[in-house]
Length: 257
Image 1 (tube, rainbow, N blue to C red):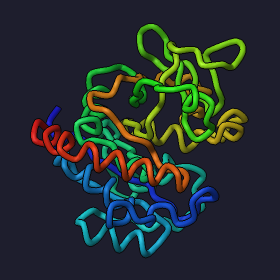
Image 2: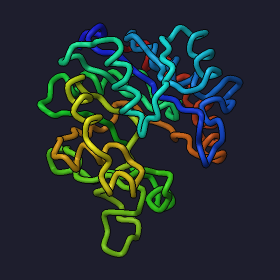
Image 3: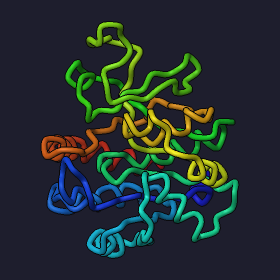
């Protein structure tokens, strides 16, 4: 896929119950959101940040991302992304990648992979997953799990332990979902005009709205390894360690885009 054929929007709200002012938390000497933006910009695609906070906007502007200040009370990152697409009047067939602001370890090759995978599929959405590494991850509500059909389409996402009758570590059949989505603008328009379903509200997972209304989400194995997303202080330390240990690998991967 040509890099000019997709755009990246990073929704980043300042409010977080588990980690206050999460996007501005310092990670390896700079705000966490800066890592996410810089990884996105390595794809060569145009990057926008949709936020409700002037300090986040200032960080994004200094790096060179486009900035959209949200004035509406959005229920999800998808709604923020749709707001940007609406203001920019992007065409219905345009591909937009929603990269979660709390994914500072997402390699650029994976971001491009989402856009490319959606471009050749007939699915409404595309996302990525990586291997679930441990029972601790399986049991953690901060780790989103995904169960897939045999053809790779997502069956269900959950914060709970899933994939086994007793709730114990299944050792297979369940993967860790990472916070990135690809959609066409027309799909965004449909999603934001649907109501929040009970399972979306219960799980606090926006992708469940799409599944609830019969949309198909292609869930692909990430090309490059992805470190931890950040929801807690402990995640922040884990992400810092991961970035330090994988800096050279990330540079090599970016050079292959």
